[in-house]
Amino acid sequence: MSTDKKNIIIVGGSYGGISSAHHILKHTVPQLPDKTTYQVILVSPSTEVVNRPACPRALISDDMFPQDKLFVSIPKSFSQYPSENFLFLHGTATNLDHTNRQITISLATNETNTLTYHALILATGASTPSPLLGLTKDTTFLRQSWTALRQALPHTKTILIAGGGPAGVETAGELSEHLNGRSSSPSTAKVRITLVTSGPRLLPQLRPSLAARAQSLLSKLGVTVLTNTRVVSIDPPAAGAADTHLTVPTTVTLDDGRTITADLYIPATGTTPNTGFLDASLLNADDKRVETNPSTLRVDRTGARVYAIGDCSTYARPAVHNIVAAVPVLGANVRRDLLIACGKDESTVGGDKIFKEDMREGQLVPIGKSKGVGALMGYKIPGFVVWLMKGRDYWMWMVGGIWSGKQWA
Image (cartoon, rainbow, N blue to C red; front, side):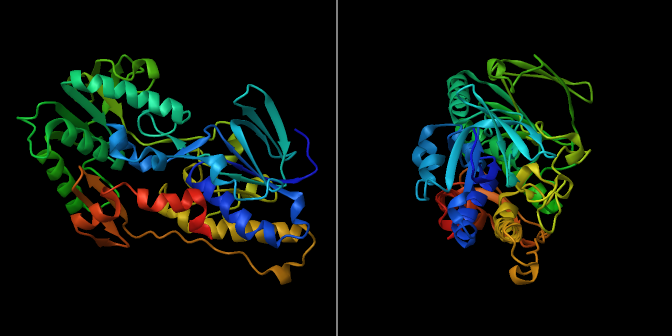
């Protein structure tokens, strides 16, 4: 694909990528000289975006959420902008040549495109180990995974979930309330659900008293929690992860030598950043996220006008609220760099906008449809506020404005 446009390429079609694209189209492109020469190209392996935090409840039934709000068309969300300034590419980035400022995209049509970029934003996010809990491929595959689970649930007597973070806790709570009712206990539960975490407690980002409260609420829904317990191996090895092994009976070996056989195994043990197409020199050696300047969101090792945001980046802890706070900073610094590239004097465009992560305790974790634990800005908040803000509909009230761009108006 050859073009005489100055391409602002954004790789990733979720919170970071969609928000950045809207912000740049609304606030950056209109302020550039010769604005018709700039094209924002958004690349995503899915034509739809999904509200990922809702997956622990959405996986149970289509009746849990309005499907047109849970899944939203990306091209339709961007039809409000001039076609000369925006292009959506349904595909996956396979290689970045940051020396020659080119990125290769494998399109859904099986064609390959190599594009030259004027500016580049990496917002490829991270993949969940379970295809039930996020977009490991696209929304079609996510729906197929949920269908397979729903067909298996009526015949399921035992479920083992690995991971003591929000995804594991929320999934255990939602499934147990759905299968065992709102009042149960591990000894009387119709379906035995076990949640295993390698840490000394659940929810390590929250204070110990909130973690203990979460464990108590899960127990009242019939969930058995095993702390300080690591999964050593699973048989079959692809259980819970590969689509062909999503709902197979699984033997799980724990680090204390015990084995548990479960009808369903759901791995909820963190995420893996989608950075495999990037040169290792650009990545943090420990977690493979893109080494990003935490103040400016620039990827300093790649040359001019390359940025990273969201779960693929080291700029902050992976969290939607960190993305929302960082987007205006990213947008302002992209605008500044593009104006300087046009020949504007640095003194006339102002200095960098600076991002500072809010390091205070902050996490909301619904447990079933009416309870939850959480803290905001360092303060513990009551369970009914967790329900009001997140547990009611898992942010559905908020994300519509992000997908449509109204959040960035």
